[in-house]
Amino acid sequence: MKRAALFALGLNGLLLSSALAGPFDYGFDGTLSDHFVPLFPNPNSTITQNDVTEQVEYTASDGDLSEENGTGLEHINFRPRYDQSWRVAVDVTLPAGYDTSFLANNPANQDNGRDTWIELGIFAFTSFDDRRVFSSSLEVILDGGSVVQRNVASHHDLDDSSRRVPTTDTSVRLTLGYDHLNEVLSAFAGDTQIHTANLGAASSDWQMTDSDTFSIGIFGSTGFQAVSADNPLIHDNFTAAIIPEPATQILALLAVTCLRPVRGLRA
Image (cartoon, rainbow, N blue to C red; front, side, top):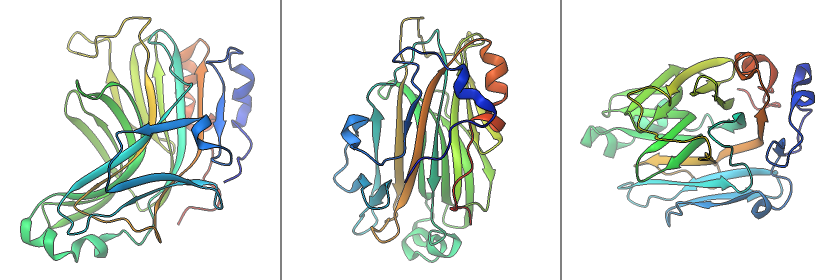
């Protein structure tokens, strides 16, 4: 979809001029491979650009709904160092069709009493094998076959922590921000801060040095659920940029400066 004006309050005027700083602003209205490459391909999931709607769409075909599926796209050029502050953001839509009744009426979920979910979002990572992954997402989850919730969420895989805030929104702008002065990753949904991860804490196992880099990606994920091509999960309006110092002051303004409203997608 076509991109709206960047950064109310003139934040783009503060951005650095280097190639890495960007800003990288992609409305999925060009050649996808110039910006993203496939990440953890899955034969049961697709995440592709729709050149008509100018959005990225995620679908999952589970067949007998017996599998967990997920796939993503990794940004090619934006790989900020550990000693740089940065922010990335994307609009996501999880359509209203995937709601309480959709999940709760699935007999397989009720019979097995298992957690099932539909989720899409944005994440920063250094290693999937070592679980150094931090995300911001929009999800619908069925907990143990009984309790259904729609949430904005954030997951920190390394310390097995998740934060969830109930929502009725079908669309939201998700943001990740990193403050290198305090070595803290933060996840936002709209103007709500969901979660933080202190990478510099003595208990942290990210083990990054100043020259190490983050990778950035977008993803879709389903557990024992199908997502049809007629009603896909949607990403739009990706932005990424290095933030000049003082990083803590800029990151504190994330909610009002770089969180553009979703254009006509909010339910």
